Image (cartoon, rainbow over all chains, first blue to last red; front, side, top):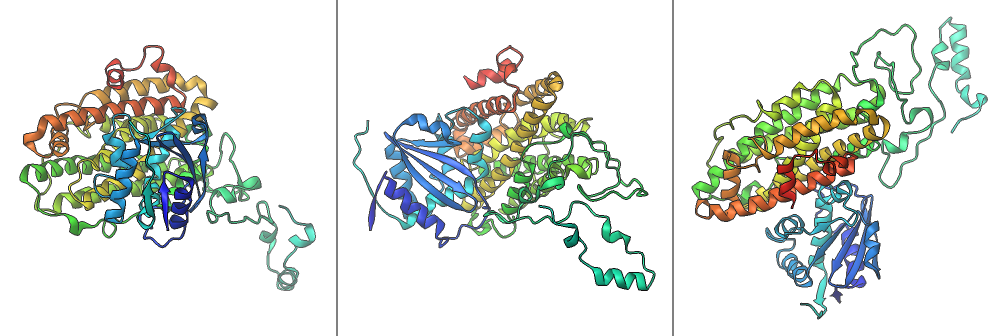
Amino acid sequence: MSVIFPSLNWFEELRNRFNSNQRDNQVGVGTCDALVGVACGEKLFTVQFEAFECTNVMELEDESALENTDFYLELHPNDWKDMIINIKENNGAGLSFTLNTLDLELSDGLAKSWTEDQYRQDLFFRFNQTFQYFFDASADVETVFEEMDIA
Amino acid sequence: MTISKEELDLAPAVREFGEDNNLDLSWLDTRGEWGVRAEPSKRGLTLGDIQLGSYGEPGDHSDNMTGRPRGARARNDAYRVGGYKIRSKADIWLSNAHVLYEESLQRQWSSATDVPWNTIKPLPDDIERAQCQLATFLTEVEFVAAEVPGRWLAATTPDYFEPRMFLISQVMDESRHLDVFRKRAFANGGGLMQRPNVTTSGTVGSIDLSNDFTEMSSRLHITGEGSVLTIFRMGELMAYNEAEKTIYRLAAQDEARHVAFGVMHLRYLAETEPERKEEIHCYLDEGEGALVAGNQNPASRDTAQSEALAILLGGGEKNFDEGYRKLMAVRKRQAREYVQRVRSAGFGERFENGRANQELLAYTR
């Protein structure tokens, strides 16, 4: 069954795949406690990681709610699409599409802090493998992309 | 949780046997708080889960010179075994050392088996030499980063074991970083290059001259490891195969933990002993000077390491200028992250009152 990106359904599907432990996600991972925001155009989500699981995903109505996140990941919708397609093609992010690479290649970065608290934003680095495995799990999700009104 | 006196007397048969045979069993009654039952959480049974009752958070000062485990009942005639210089909590404490320690244990990795070494293929000579120059630099730097915390382990009272054990995990992390970059240098037909001019005899070396733990931590964890964290992250941009990408990504996770330790320790100190803030600002003055000049920061300018980075980022000598442009963009990020970390640690006033290094701040604009 295919699901639309970006949507709450897509993130719920991703959460299920990630939690299912079917993928090889053991190297360099452990417990992870973080509230991560995701911004794709006008659509906003939060992804809650707790201990060894992704425990909750939510859609946000107001961007000010990003204040509660430890950090949020913001990409242009076309860049999200490219990343997800690359993950599908390679069964995991290729050399140019890991979260860290995207963060470095964008002038304003991929991981951002609403509160400019670098300690909380550094969770992106401390748990980077966990977040990478989370998005890599999208290789198992049949994704279709919403036509968005994008500049 | 405490239990009744009757429950405490768990061994009447043993006591009777002792009395019958003139055995001294008084040790049965000398113990710390009893009846403690720690419950595992969804994270397992963590150090946080056993911080209970009198075994929990230690006092502001420790007179424990005998190696007595925190919360154990003291033995009056025990002799001193430790030269514990660090016996004031603010000297080493942070609110989440136990969390960072558990995180470290869980996120360990093996440079031998978790890196897909077979993905390394022959590279153009200029790229291979640049990788090896950087590997030489990082091998040396990580040696220092392992050595320095080690000096403070035996100086710390057992009452503050959480930060002490985190430092032990850091020694392991840095040792792995040393070995993985050494392995990379030998993995593809290259080898070690010339040792950088002033790496461990400059600011990096001066970390080891610190007389005070916080002095060491501000230099090592904030200015030193903060900048190396950026280099490790940048490694993914200049990786030419999955092996190099894996090395840098996993090393960056480790380094981010060490930086977090430093930020949270400084935050604790700023909150509990604000009279020491001026002293800490002096250490940051020194550290910022090192961030903008000299060989200790591979993202600085006109060093063998910075040129190696430019070659790697650009894709070869012929694209040096493009690589250098990328390097300067990363340097800007490095400076911004440093500023935000120092703010987060509670020392942000230096960026408002003109004290911060202006050359460093120029990179953030």
